[in-house]
Length: 484
Image (tube, helix red, strand yellow):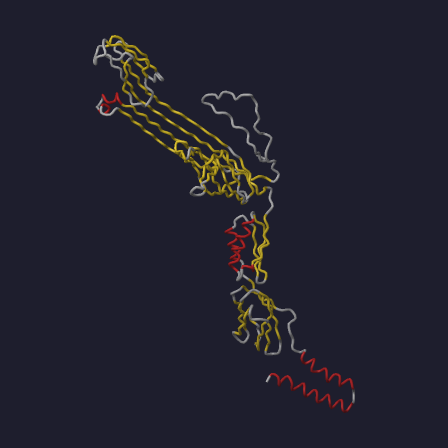
């Protein structure tokens, strides 16, 4: 019907113009007759400036055209869909990010053009980035199907983690474009680690023992001694005596000799009248030992550094079998060891540290083919933590307690109440060792001078005497940070 209404007037005007041409014979009129259909097609108007329509992926919007709609055409339906809901309204639904054109034909003959812009809703992504990476400057932008991250961060690991978070908002991991850069500050990615190993060893010893012996001439011609062999006892030397005859039980006419003492112990009594002696050992001993090591290490962020102050001892290892057995030597390390891996995160240091202290233990040594192989007494710990620049943490409680009690007695007589105490000896030993490790990380500035000239020097030919109940002042640190 619409086509007929438009074509009717055009045909009528053409017939009139042909009649005029036949009558007048004008060529200029013929030119106007051929040009008339072109002017009729140009009468269908299209708005020169498209109307922008913006919506998010998965969202819909309603467009009110204002006039009756004849039909609708989209560049592609992959980006958005359009549905006519009434004579003058459209429902547009965003599917994927992109920009397309939409044409709407009016029933009156006009054409309207719209520019449909579908983009991602990045508000949720921005909120997550601010919450997960506090203190970092990260912005998310939409670029068609891709998400572009821009800004500056404190560490390269933040770039990878932020890209992983943004990957959840796109179909493919490749659709995330990262333009993040590591912020350049006054600090570098090198860490100085100050470590202090403090070991305190306490020991206590108590001993009590008794020894009875006779003089060199004996008691009624009888020489003897009673001891629990906890400590050295007197020895009889150069004993001489004469008897009336060689008969058994003959009377002794003269006797002589001497007693050799290796230790008079604590209490010694010898009666020359009764030829009896008594030695008592009552000893109480207390000791205190303190060892301090202070290694300093510098490592790059993310790189492992290690330190060992000690030595190596050989261990024979048998190789081969049968008649072809050979012995090789394997060296085992011992001493004060420290391994750590720092990671700089702004003004904080994520630290993975593993301190260890090991000593040679000859009490539990193993003798193999003439070789005495000592055991190792080892104390180690491993932990991960995060510290501020210059903050100190301590690893304490690495304690080793041991207690030994020994009692010796003369069988039988040593079990008699009260009197049996004279024939017993007792020793008790208690050892307590505690190790404390204190660690302080420092982020070195880019203009740090590093090692200073305050290194140990020999000031006197001999070390001075250590004053009692006083401690020596600590030497100045080998590393000094600017401004501290």
